[in-house]
Image (cartoon, rainbow, N blue to C red; front, top):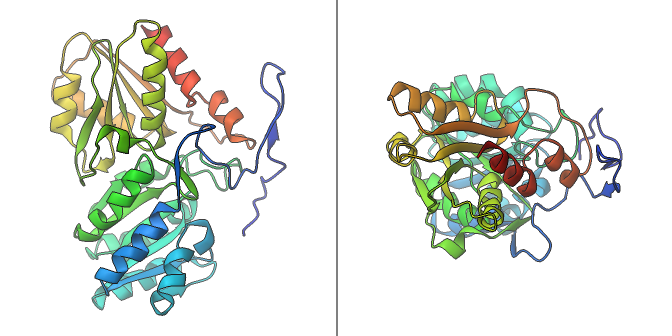
Length: 343
């Protein structure tokens, strides 16, 4: 496993001098105590799908165990390619396999795909319109390691790239559904990946994933939270917390960042009298928040108010995830507190 120059013991003292929270930064679960989880949903879904689609191959840049691709590799060893610590080679090989009629799933960490392999994804995959699925772990602030592993700007980097669909799933339920959906979707896809023991949330709401579709998970009269990825889980938890204060919060889950489901966003944000809050596990620069804001502005839709919950435009600290999520405002309690203040 790669070591970061920023890496240090996974603990931080809270700003208020409270108790020190400790956890394993690389394997910390995003699930709350007692929350239902599913182990390695991506690896299991891809391995199962590969039995039906013999053209599927899996590639990794020395990180199969840390992207759950090792499950696919164990079940389909003749269709797994270990490319070593060479993300540019990884993407080039995936492009070559796609040209030969295979359906490659290339996995690594989001920081390495966005920062180290961008030009190869652009020139070898996206410009050529090739059918490559790029699935990347540790998106946003999902590791306690510092800037070398925190992909806080990956969506901003990839949003400007033509011919690339961007997916940010919420939980294990959605990842399991997204794997066959993106396999069936023509062209290049970049999907952020929650790995390991992934929370189960959306199955309780009868949710079905569709590429390019935003969906209302719960309705609310006072505030509309537009969210993606793990922040939809946090938004639902915050909505429950706000209900105790008499605040009725709705949640619109936007799993596909590009192409954006503008029609649904405009319809929901245009319902009068509601504060619109966009919540994302990504820097406030260039992500879902700015995409939604631009959509509203271009179409003349003016909500009752507009706010963003996201990561700051900065290199973030290293430490325990619970502390970091509180510090940077993306924990459930921090989100609920921000919305209370805005209302």
